[in-house]
Image 1 (cartoon, helix red, strand yellow):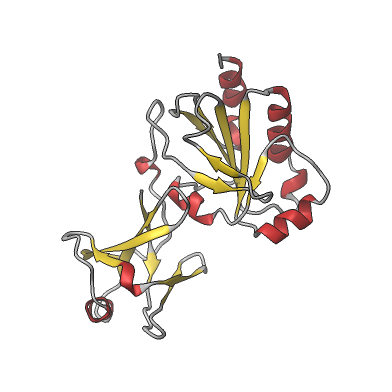
Image 2 (image 1 turned 60 degrees about the horizontal axis):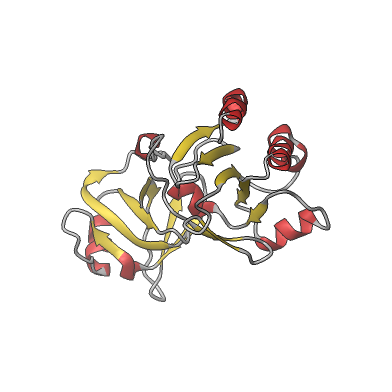
Length: 227
């Protein structure tokens, strides 16, 4: 899926790498051999990219696959960056449409493949980190409560915390869901803009709905309607 992330790009070509900074102060290391012209589909040379960026700031679109890996980057030379971070929720999968597939790895090295999970409901929760106070706040506790009461739902908690941070925080505690670390690219793949955000997926892999902390009533209603 193509995720448009507005990046203020300062490309420094050294050691076959380029560095770009987003407006949320996150530094991403870019492989310049994966930058393509969005309009023509042609691979761009380092010289072409450098010359473009020397005269104007451009948007870089990350094409993220189901493994949460960046497959390539695309630049539209005709669109100048608006210099603000944005994720367009209008590009999200809509209710009733097939949800974009994923293959995630939990902190216990369990593979969570959405294609292989078909036949059961899936409830995802996206959170920035697994650190306090997130572990003791209502959305996390409510997530655990829901999954303890609904055995027919596969719960997956995704955060941007590292595997070590996650394991250290969880300790010996056990939950009724899997915990996936290093989930930033999945946040971008599914265009997450609020934390926490929950996503309910039907048995056939289609999207039921998105939920923020303000939508818990709707989530409970939707859960009651599950067959």
